Image (cartoon, rainbow over all chains, first blue to last red; front, side):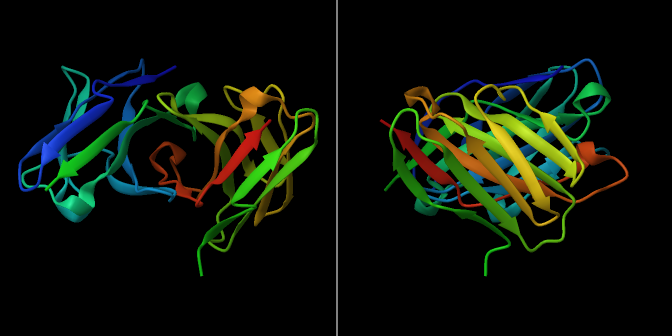
Length: 115
Length: 116
């Protein structure tokens, strides 16, 4: 079985500042990692995913994440945030074995961008 | 038009009532999922279906049942609703791939259910 921990429940930041949303996972098998974003009153939308290969993954809206196997982390970063980035962000892990085809989600991080 | 639709979008009901939440998709995907979202808990999987004849329990299936009426439709039922089932419910779909662990899941807009 796998699990995901998002280390910050809320992250306030000023517009144009950099941001990092932290995600740690645990799994006994190879994993695939995802970041989803949920804007107010909407469903979840995929930001980016790591399947294999380069550990630095670029996604939509200027976000990127780095897979670190030794630290079992997949932190999300953006060098300069906008007001429109205010949303809740979810890290998720997929794996093979008995978890085939399923995602396990973290608790979510609410990013609030202030003017 | 949205690829994954959910009805109703909002519902208020009373304890003990039977409730059905419906999900339809036009993406042609084989796999469909039901999740519930609670503040501070993220999304938790209730049921999932890899095709019309393959339905499986997720981590929190107690108190829920599902029906996969067709490839495009997946319904979630609460036979006798209770207040702790108050939550935001999401349907999602994904396509069959060689390794479904890598599937991207596509989410509907959600149904906000309140049980009084």
